Structures are given as C-alpha cells and as structure tokens.
Length: 408
Picture (cartoon, rainbow, N blue to C red):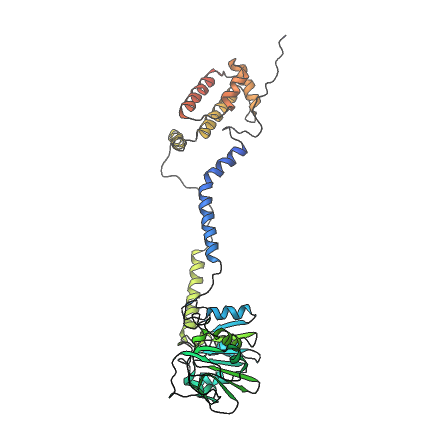
C-alpha cells in the first residue's frame, strides 16, 4: 500500500510571487530614492544656512553697523559689551519714541538733514543729549553753546585743558572744532594748539548741565570712527560720553525722514494714503472673484461610463506591458506574471478552486504531470530570473509544464 503525503513547498515566509521580500523591496526603494533624497537634503541644509541670521552691516558713514573705517561699528560693539543697549534709528519719530524717558542717552550724529522743527523736537527730549557734528544747528539744539567760525578747525591732537572728568580721563583726542560757551555753566575742552587752556577758549568738546539733563557737544565726529577710535584718548572720551546710561538711542538723520511716526496711534493709515475709489474697486473685484469661484466650482454630476473611441486588443496590451517590462529590465515582475497565469490555468485544469493555495496547486500539478513536487514548486514559485535568457527559458518551461497538465 502506497502512502501519499502532502508536499510542503520550501518557500520562505514573506516571499511573494516575484521572489522579493519586504526587506529586498525596501532596499530597492532606498537605492532608487537615495540620489534625489541626497540632493533634497543638500538644498534644505543650504536653505537653512541662508536663513541663519547674519550680522547686519551697512556703508552709511558713522553708522553703528558700518565696519568700514568711516563707520562706528567698533564703538557700538564696545558699548554693547559694557551692557549698553544700542538702538539705531533713522527718523526723528523713532528717536522720540525710543528716548521718551529720562535715564537714556540720545545721540544725534550730523545736522545736514535736520530742520528747525526736527531740532526743536530733539531739544525737547528728556534724555541726555550727545550732539556730534551739529554745529550749524546748535542755536536750536543747545543755545548755551556756539561756534567761533573765525578760529581754525583743522584736525589735530588736542589736550583736555579743562575740569570735565570725562575729558581729563581721555587726556588727548584727535579732533577739530571751535565750540564756545555762550552762557555760564558751559565747560569747553580740547582747545586748539596754542590757545589758552581756559573755559573761554574755543574747543572741540563742550558740556552743559540743563537741570537733570546733560548735554554733550563734540564738533568733530572723527573720534567715533573705526579708524580713529584707537588713537589717543578718543575711545575713553566717546565711551564715557555715550555710556552714562544703559540705553543709547543712536539717531542718524536721513533724507527720507518726514517726521511722521507711522507706528504711533493716530498716524496715517494705509487707507488714508490711497484714493477713495480704491476700496470700492477692491470690493467689486472681490465680488467678481466669488462669482467666478462659484461658477467654476459648481458641483459635478454623477459619474457615467463612456465608450472608448478605440478598442485595444488584449494581445496588444500584453505585448505593450512586455515591452515596458523589458525596457525597465523588470524580470521579477515579468516572471511573476507568467507564473501567476500558468498556476491559475493549471489549477483550473486540475479541478482546483480559485482559492487554492500554492501547496494544493503544486500537489495537483505534480500528480497530473508525474513530476517531482520540488521541480513544480521551483517552476511556479521559485526565484526570479536575472536576465533575458533566464526569463525566456522560464517561459518555455512553464509552457511545457502547462501542456502536461490534463483536465480532470
């Protein structure tokens, strides 16, 4: 008596018809996506590097962010390292807002773009004033100090020659100017070489106390510059003059300063700067856009079937898919399609249902053809071919195997 046992195929768990596993598919996908992902990562890293905040610099003379010889970035950085908060502004409105309280210092550099109303607003500030190179507007800014235009103002090394503590600590500076005292209580320092060392002699530096506010005037901006800051006592003088309070407002007047505080309440809004007809036109454009959106976005009707204009034969579809597989060298998918078709037809001939598994199909085909179950399993569920010759040989063997299966 012959005992027949069911054959268990040696197919590994997780292996599909084309001979691939989850790990092999993931590896293949990673190899295909590795290059574009690398390029994308390079662009992302480059974009992040470009988005990093960079030190803000300019070429504006005497600006606190100008690293050139004529700039004053070195002085601003020294003050910041000593705990002084430096606020750089270019408009009188921003300067008023930043220096609106006592206990701060308002630095005004240059008077070329200052006007009478601007000078009056600066003079009314409660903060301590440091006026540099504002000799033509001194009458409006600080009436106690004037300029002697008949005295030579060329740049030179000057000694303090006064009793002001800041000037005494500085000792000497490289500056020019002829500031004179027009009232009592004004201390004038750094007179020109050969002038008498008294408060009445014209000098480059003047100090006056206006009650609780201190006003410092420096006729020459040279000591502030990056190039001249290390010379003589320039650094000591300007640092002590500007670093008396923890907040310094660095006001550099500009040509486009209209004196309007756009950020303050009551300032002109955007609607005040456009013609009255603009809001009406904007409302009409919005209505047109809504109507167009409703018209183009109307609800579609039910899905209907449509006859194809051309009937494509099954053979042409099969050949087209085969060409695609060959062009992409997808031997595994082509082999999987051939094996799936052969296994389905062989199972139908052997009388097996559509739900029959690989084990039942192998057993039925082996009994019908007389072949060993291992050979049948290798043909129907074996490893995928790796070249055209192996795929062609597999197709021929599958066709031969199908021809040996008899209907039951």
